[in-house]
Figure 1: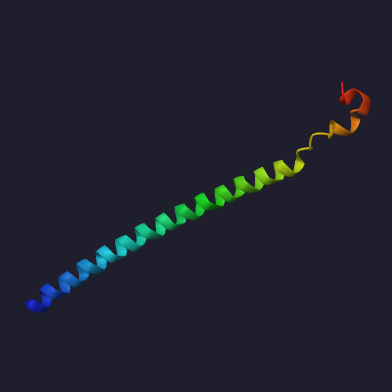
Figure 2 (figure 1 turned 90 degrees about the horizontal axis):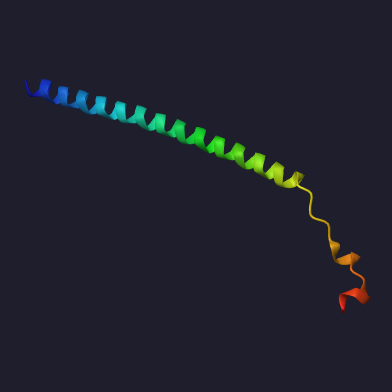
Length: 69
């Protein structure tokens, strides 16, 4: 009788362990998906930054005689 109770307890522990493992696997998959999405967003932003033209340097256009007035 004690062996049956111990086996039932062991089966219960294995069941709980299996369910937690499945839950953790699902959470890991969700985190990987979110991380991949954020990485894609970061790549898009980096490509947009590289494509933006830099503003022209207008300091070379200032004449010395007008700068002192």
